[in-house]
Image (cartoon, rainbow, N blue to C red; front, side, top):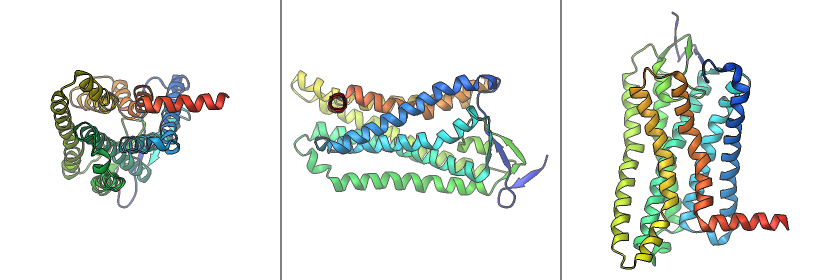
Length: 313
């Protein structure tokens, strides 16, 4: 078996869709297209509503804008290879393009995790200090949080791409999914990838692992604050402001945990199960977040309905 060092001659990589169902890709691609169309349209709608409605220029909706932008980035990063595999049966992808896609998939995933944490902090401040809410979360503070979130993701993932580029690969490599992921690329190497694996684990622990612990801590603090409110009606009202965010957190972390469990314990599972779980992990959050916030957040829902009624008239 011939081996290529990626620093000299680049190997060939082939993406994988749903093995054994190639003759049904035309039919399978229709729901995939609807998911992407709904995700992109939904997140653009959220951004448009927040941008055009001055009453929504508040910290909570600024963080929601960050979430919508991140979901748009994640959708547009995976869209080209998904369609090339399921629409055009074009599976080959160059090593450099694969690295770029991998980089942005993981960057946007880490950003989404951090934005969800920032939104939990926003809910805690709103419930704990309602009178000082706007004074604490000023535009400058929110901008700084956004820069820190993006900077952390960009800085954490870059060395992973650099380390992968220094490894050796077979001349032809078959990937497990219709997009490039760090753990999938590592499996195709023929040289020692110990450093890359350790660094990849460190990135997960320092980003999503840390964020999930801080999220739990944030909600413990929110719960303690809510329970200290004397009025039952006010307690219910305070908790209702968190429902959309809790749904977004579950939508993000549940598929991620499911994918990790399948990779760890599902070696005997069908390859289709692995592909489906990976697709759910990357496609469901961008699809569900705008739907959840449009349905559960009265201010967003009312503004969307108002826009539709205006266009009808």
